[in-house]
Image (cartoon, rainbow over all chains, first blue to last red; front, side, top):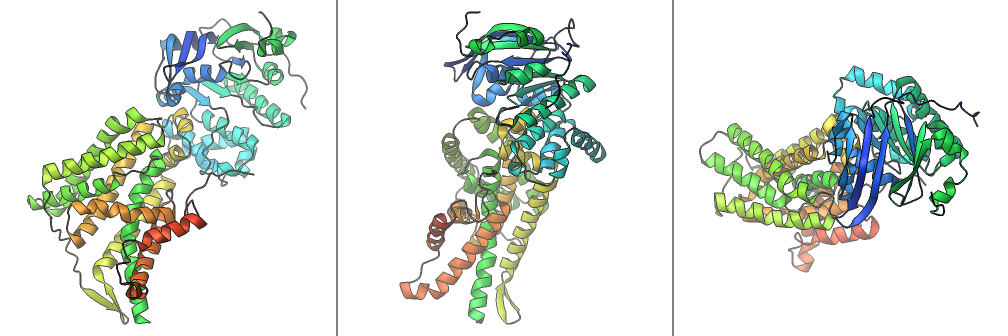
Length: 262
Length: 293
């Protein structure tokens, strides 16, 4: 396992937020409350962790940001989502992808019958690249995830969980996003693979300035690489602090379980 | 031996026509996960539009172009008014919608263009020719060649083009496709238009043989066993299924028919389909969920 990385510094601190959620409420099927009142900001160049137990509202918050709520027959019923200062509440997810927001779904969601390389290609479609540019961009992704190159011709459904997670992230990066929403990238993966994936995320953030909002149940790993964090419980933000401060607290698990009164 | 060969080849050639009908179903099933009950009506509508335009005096190519344009408009209309409002509903809801759609299309076709039988002459002579000493229908040969060409073109399209790969991506995972910017509505429009065009080709060939009339929409009933045998998700499967059904029903009619009074053709494919359901429920080439164990 790698040594402790030095406490990261938020490069975007003080800048206008890249994305801002203002008191959003989400309802599913016009009846079931998804989240009650979420406000958060992510500055350009930040990695922000979204922590909380199952059902705290992490996935719903990400879907409200990427527009994918629509695929679950849900909508933002109160509040608004701003991206670079513009209201994007309720905009279709495929349009948001062209504007720079990409969502890596919980459970990876690779295209199982497509080969690894075809999966990556789909990520480039919205930019309508020529053959040469496509090859160049695929090469870059293979540079980050060398394992994917060896599995190029394999149907994605037959690769391992870690490879699928890398593929889902690589495919998302090929849309050239400004904001990447990652939902539970550690789910079901061996700790060493989780560490590898988070190190690649942190590396991309440092070298390319890509902004990440990461929903995670794995507190330790996500706080080691994030700049700031929000803790959700019962569809509300119950705590927010820098990752360094959150690491110091030993009551996070209690908040997760809804035991602490914050 | 000659009788056997003739029966087999005749069956295989007729089977490619079944394949052609089945391919239309496969396209829509892959893209929207729904068994499109309206495929038969679309086929009828397409063929009827084409033959009506011909009768109005349009040259062949112009009639074809106008029909295709109408099919594309129709696909856009169906996507806007039926598919988009019902997106993310259960497959059963969508299926019921296509059931309703089939009656709307059929009604519109007959309301606009009448219910009489139209003869269609594609200029292919239906005289049998000898290959070696086996007698084969020339029309069947042309129909088979058309079906195979169409299938090859579609296969190339799916495997190599942006739209083709997007379509397969949508078939695998709609949410993920949306998340990386694939325009689902556009894909649906394209797929329904292509299914309409495939229906047009199938309708022209069937129509040239038996006249273009209301009963043409019942070729759906021929496609169902083909799909069960070949699998709902594979164009190759639709081809194989069509060939199997065509050959089997022809052989059964010739060799088993005399013993049980004939008339086997209408039900034998279903008998075969049920047998396949026992042995291979996903069909010969159907995609099962691809997962590593």
